[in-house]
Amino acid sequence: MLGVDAPDFTLPALRGGNERLSERLGEVVLLNFWTSPCNVCRQQLVKLDDLAAQYASDGLVVFGINLDGNKRRTSEAIRTLNVSYPILLDNLKNVSRSYQVEKMPVTVLIDRQGMVRYVSKGYRLGAEKRYAAKLRELLNE
Image (cartoon, rainbow, N blue to C red; front, side, top):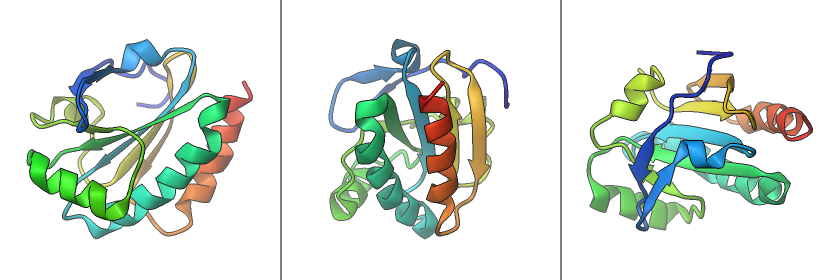
């Protein structure tokens, strides 16, 4: 998956409307695939919210891609965690399949030209420092 064009998609956003990845060319995009029952995913969501706020003005866009298939449960999780970046609903799991997501969470960094530059599977506390280093590298290109 590294070094290939990121598979394009359009997904509905939890708060309404749709998001299309190809409309974000020119920005660095972080995709985070997660589910509500996954406690590690929930920890990571909060840390990613900090990164989203810190680097938004530099051209970072963060999308949480939820695979629950249950909008109410997803809404409750986001409200509880107070996450502010857009949450997209991959109810049919087509997008997660195209990104070869097998275990949660998975984080994908896409450069300004739309190429996958970094993939992280799973999450351990502190991993966001690696993401931040990669993000700075991509944002400075």
